[in-house]
Image (cartoon, rainbow, N blue to C red):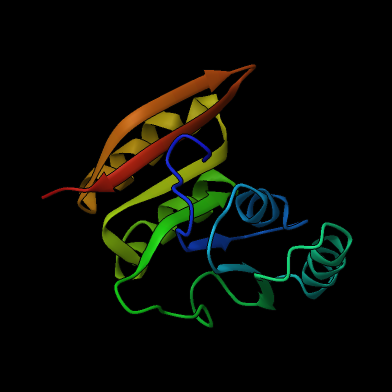
Amino acid sequence: MAKYMKEGDNLLDVGTGSGILAICASLLGAGECYAYDIDPVAVRVAVENTELNHTPNVTCAVSDLLKQAKKTEGGYEIVVANIVADVIIRLAPDVGDYIADDGVFIVSGIIEERAEEVTAALSANGWHVEEERFENGWYAAAARKQK
């Protein structure tokens, strides 16, 4: 994420869990950060973590994937999803509506055995994977909309 983020970029964190990615983005100089999770307990913990880390530009809320996610004019420069492969595959068709024209969709939390399925779903939905990382059985990728 740090490689792709520029100061002031807005970030959307889908499936935030503890809020760690949105908090890191904030500490790296992000503009507005929106962190969503389907689990109200996770959102409560994420809010507590934003307060502990003094990151007032991080807004946490309950949302089933993108259903309640705030759309921004021009889109988010970065959308992150550190969640299981099945959920990322479900996100692939719709997440482009939330991303700026040159924005990046960063996916992680994927077991290595499911990497090919995720990249196939991204490609089938107009994404170009420009970077992949494999580490200790886990997979992550950064993708942009195909032009």
